[in-house]
Image 1 (tube, rainbow, N blue to C red):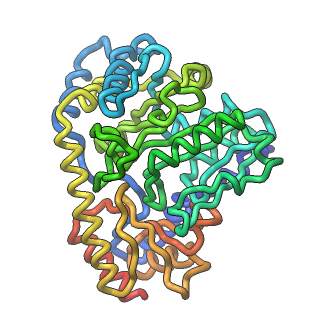
Image 2: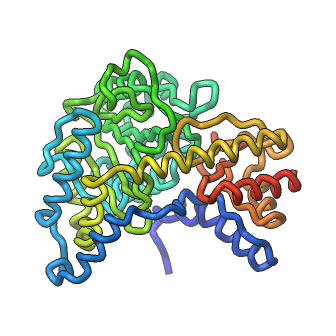
Length: 400
């Protein structure tokens, strides 16, 4: 058979490659401690599960769900956003339900890019951001993000010929994999840059709630939603002139397997993405949306509990690494530790992760899998209780 050239760049990714290494380790009798995937081991709140369970017994939820049927969910999402960030949102024209934020970032390039157009992506960055561009036959210009710049891109480094053919930029802060955060001033710079060059600005925002401190920076104002270390792109673009933002309930509400998220932003972009979505699928089962509504509108104590749990895991893991002589910075957000590899492995993150899991059972994600600029780093996901994380570091110490 002959296949389209566009799928050639999709034949391998960091998660699939590590899955093979984990399978091999298990076959050799290793006890696996999997820190390679950001799939939460925590559970959704009981009232969320109950809303889904009750829906199962309601025959009216068993059919296809079209856009009109998502109105209550869209209203809940709009209300959540306005309460959180102080930006009014029209649930009819500025909100779109998604099968997780990954669906949005993967499908939006089909609505924005013509073949040969450039997308400006963070390097390192989340693999699906590149995948969607490949599917749209677009070109990728990687924007290197480095520790000395706070893992923020430098827009003035983008070549003029690339800018002339650029149609979209994808940002994501708090950032996966580096766990970096971005201030509102940076987002204002990004909005101004994209307005100047007629570029669609996409912000993937799955870690909106997974932050561990608040900023005292006076530039962020006095309201609670302005002091967050995780500002929304629409706070920098309140008119939604060029911006769209993707949310998911996977991280904040531990609903990764339910595949529920949504987009908020520029009405034209929302409508264009809705057209792509209509050609690909219907919406999720209504019961899942009912669970999401319960999550967004119900008590938020579960979110705070999850954040506190991740904070404890972060502190435990970082302290344990420091004790064995591996000094890594303490992240202010996300569920990840982005660790610069020891000199011996500084140019072979894939080799490090492959040998680590084969010899110790500890699985991590190689930085090179997230982009060229990720080489020399490894990402650990905090998806186990603290005793397991301590054991993982003990095994890492023996390996090193």
